[in-house]
Length: 365
Ligand code: PHE
Image (tube, rainbow, N blue to C red; front, top):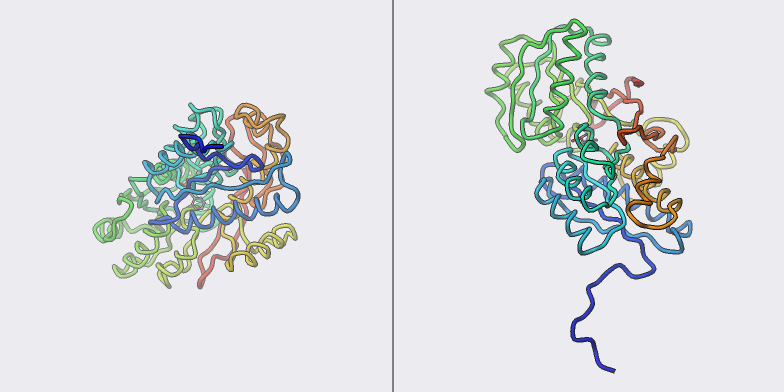
């Protein structure tokens, strides 16, 4: 026999179901992507050990989007056209997930973002889901905490104007904090990747706030905290889930201690199911799982459950099953998807200490 003139394209082996992942393994959001990949791979390993799905083994095809929306969109196109994945998981930063959803939706391939909280992501269409809460809730949580628990009445805001997430949270926080009787003393902006925030911090200092809300990502927030202290701005900073990275403590040092942020889960939760996940993750990767890892593990498990329950592996069948998700036992809270394909669940507030964040309180929707 002779070899075929044109070698066939390389689809997944027939005994494998491929899940596509696009996330930020390098760049300013690198820890987000690494935790996300780890959480997904832990869930896949467990599912394969338990016999796989529909007689097949699961495998993740992971592409690094470098934290850039254009790369994220390209990765999804490749996952769909070339790798023929049955479903897509990712990304973390909302701006990347927005670009991904714009490719997944018209192709009819279901996508679950573990951790993107900007409302517009799932509004792109009925194939796009998330297993986390959205920013109108997260912004409310910190406004309420600042006003009622910390009793602040004057807060300034420093937003990242390159991030859909940061712009959205700024909007909600300023609206809610004002509604609760607080005053926003000023709103300043930076662009992701900037390294000098002194001009904005100097302007903020003049408004004499009791705190600064900085809804950005850890790479910038850590540096902002240091420069604020250098300028004699000693008030605490407040933030959202984008602070969640072990790099925050390294970059921010003592300058970030005593500041607060909202998040999806605390690894200190004594629930035995959570502690088992923390122990398994530590054994596999040598670090404490952050919220990204927990949400990625949850998103992968929702996907795997849907693949098991769906009558076949068409995008439509998988989509229809995911849409029915109710009371799914996630690590970062139980997952019930509403008619807008968003999860409705509590948030935690954490306080930055020495090298880690301490649990303060839980706020329910
Ligand atoms: N919620 C952030 C976004 O939408 C991403 C994020 C989630 C970052 C959880 C850290 C932890 O951009």
